[in-house]
Image 1 (tube, one colour):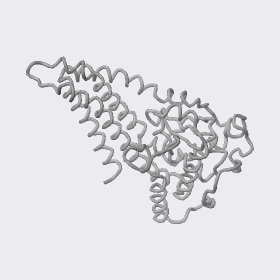
Image 2 (tube, rainbow, N blue to C red):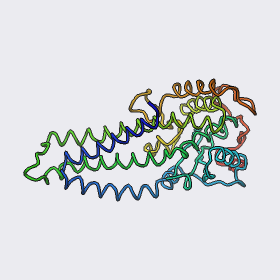
Image 3 (cartoon, rainbow, N blue to C red):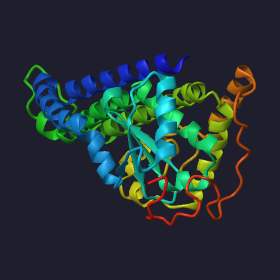
Image 4 (cartoon, helix red, strand yellow):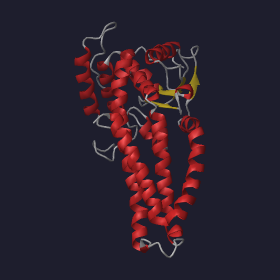
Amino acid sequence: MSGYLKTTLLLAAMTALFVAVGGAIGGRTGMGVAFMVACATNLFAWWNSDRMVLRMHNAQPVGPQDAPELYHMTARLAANAGLPMPALYLIHEDQPNAFATGRNPQNAAVAVNTGLLQRMPPEEVEGVIAHELAHIRNRDTLIMTVTACLAGAIGMLAQFGFLFGGMRGREERGLGPIGTLLLMLLAPLAAAVVQMAISRSREYEADRAGAEISGNPQGLAHALMRLEQGRHAFLNHAAEANPATAHMFIINPLSGQRMDNLFSTHPSTENRVAALMQLAQQMGPVAGPAQSAAPGGFGRPSSPWGAAAPRRQRGPWG
């Protein structure tokens, strides 16, 4: 089953769950009231989610004069992907990581941790940027916003369960106190499971499309391995303080990630690397610069992406 078909089915399941929860708790009246409240709340989040997330991580905008090599690399990859140049941000975190946000390609942004530039060679940084551009081109930020809206609406319906349960007409049979309590507990969990499954399916698609944009699947595969090492070596303070944004990063930034299961926002790195290496065999040798070497451990920053720069010192990478 393709990733797009799986995402469509999961979105349909989320919508069906929303309708079912609304009808079970409050009938037509309860579902209508909760739907209006949820839409108003999530409409605000839709228009402001990118700025909210960037503010949560204290992301700083950079231009061609601040980080020329990173800026021109991103512009070149965006042209390869057929996208306008996204806004570019730097996050002062030692953990190597990155994410994309924005409701559409015209209002998109790519945020890169300084740890990524300090500890990874250009071929791997290129793979990470291409992965994030693939999210933008695939409208994944839109998909995740829709799922977050539906998940939030389901949670709100469940919280209003007791109130709407008492508003049913005589012809409508309620769930009873126990049934309503179970629905309040299980409905948000089910919505979260579907939301996480959608996020995981989109990561595989972004890996494949990112490899095609950069033309170097092995570079992205090696980047994922290095990012996984960095996740264990460095704590991402902003992500730990805002765990709801974890699904946006190329690698889960939170410490203690669980195994590759339905409750994980990201597939296992090993599975993603294996898929990319298989794609590399299909695409053949990489033309141009040499492929990146297999990643080693993390010690002193030693790449040409700002090796000697302290954490908040401004340099060629901003």
